Length: 192
Image (cartoon, rainbow, N blue to C red; front, side, top):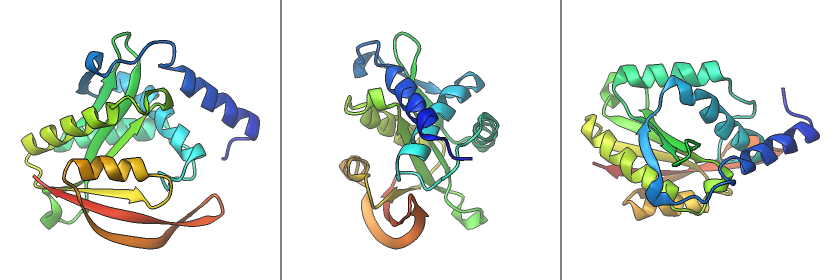
């Protein structure tokens, strides 16, 4: 169920305030494997983007149960799911890779995902998360990483991936419909 305007802005203020009380220094950020204790924070971060942006094509908020299931599934596959934690213990972002497709021949190809709290944007935390995610993916036996990025409002994400050697492989126009407009995706790929 969509949030009413007042609830939506209350969530936006809450998410912007988390992490804003402290000075965020990327050097002091700890990157570690996500745990069940992080699921609440992961859900909050992700749901901010669900209700406020077109960088995710989800149109309804996720639940903590959904994220717990995803964490357990990816852990079971031996794939990385990491969080960025500030010196004071705030979870400022997360990143993971998940199977690109279910068929067995795709088993060494994954799709990556990165989300940051609004207060952490522009602090080079996405760079730190993607570097670590690539290293952990390689250690897990991944050979190809695919990024599927919205063609609207995600220019910084595209630039970040290109800085890490991801190459544009295609554009799918008008494959999603959110906020009363059609959206497409840019496909990028990196070989490990």
